[in-house]
Length: 267
Length: 247
Ligand SMILES: Nc1ncnc2c1ncn2[C@@H]1O[C@H](COP(=O)(O)OP(=O)(O)OP(=O)(O)O)[C@@H](O)[C@H]1O
Ligand SMILES: [Mg+2]
Image (cartoon, rainbow over all chains, first blue to last red; front, side, top):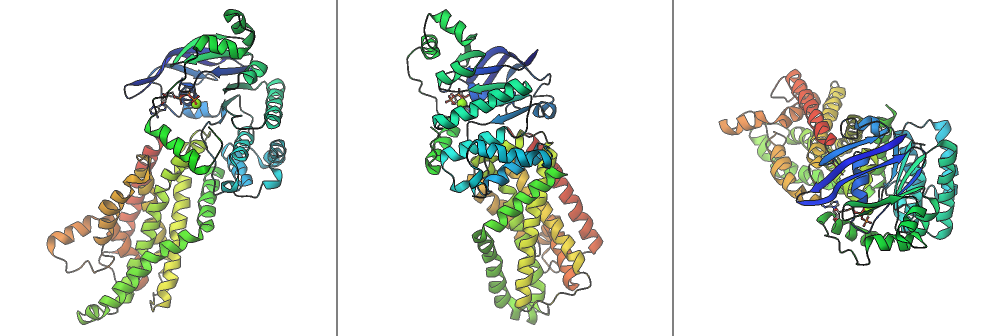
């Protein structure tokens, strides 16, 4: 069953078309990697799937619901870890987790043990009562991931979840997610710039460049198609070697400025 | 219900954790209280108005409730910039409930701020009547709801704080000065008095003052209905604008 079905979707910001007539589908219970160079349109696509942006054109179905016309039903179907910061830094780590649990209607006898389990997974349990504003960039990221795993949705979106995390943490987190995928049939939709990560965990990969999907298939298929040995080589063969200079919007430069201010290590 | 509670709780935690903000937002009402209170009290008494502090205190309390409320509503802009707003916008909760939880939380904060100012005015000699004090508190809370919702509505349409001074200088300040908070509504020049009567804040101030010390220009029932209607309209408009936020 196709839990995500995207047909002919485009998104324009003013005159600039960030996503151009893309179509793809994700099968329920699979792990799907959405890869592409900076500015390719990955985050924009995720925002359209998660009701934060309305497509300019085309149709989307998420767990059978249209995020534009039935946003509330669609929101019941997914969880998301954003690329950009999304914590309340004036609250403690535990309060951020609890806020999320209540907002997502998780019962307290379920969320209390689960918060502990997840905060231990990301090694933050002993810092649970610290204000998030005192955390390092990597600690904030770990907390965001733990929060994203707190309620068990049908589809989990992860937008560059592991950026800036050490390899140990990354392995722990992916182990946990793969286990959820097996045990609960969780569908995972993620983006990353670490090709080895995508190679290891993804069942299917789609590559987007300049707002268009240029190739899709399992990591093996993409390697065969391009006659390469690793997904990274396949990715470079498909997207070329030139460096992307993003048309930086004001929002982007704001993001950049904020990252510098917060001293986070997120790009 | 739980959602509204947790959003409310968040606003309160943020408020009580930023002690500096509590003190900073007391500075302005205190300044007005002393500057106007000592500056005008003799003129006011000579003009037959009676005790100016008794007249002024409810106006200053209204002012602090109103300013804190607008600011609580506008706070959404910070949440947008720091990214936390996205977390609430994708939650499986109706946006109306999110807006309501925030608004009630922000209003509670503004209400508490009003209570603190009320205590201070007691120290400088304000003596409210106690019989209708409960209704005064009701008016204060309605005023808080009205302006928190207004702030939320405005903030839903803004992306950064650059528009904030504009809103303060061209909306909030004029509303305040033209509300009878600092001077009696009766006996104003005609045009002026029309403007004051069109200003919904006038009725909130009148209700608060009337229930505290019996000095009111309109009937308290009229005050009550105007404030309730305006608060409901602001919450309604605010929730429509909030629902249309894209992140
Ligand atoms: N709100 C916006 N207004 C204008 N342009 C935008 C907006 N959001 C994104 N863009 C532009 O759309 C394009 C795609 O951005 P998007 O964030 O989807 O890229 P991405 O694939 O997620 O890249 P990255 O790997 O850097 O995260 C970029 O050129 C970006 O500048
Ligand atoms: Mg992105």
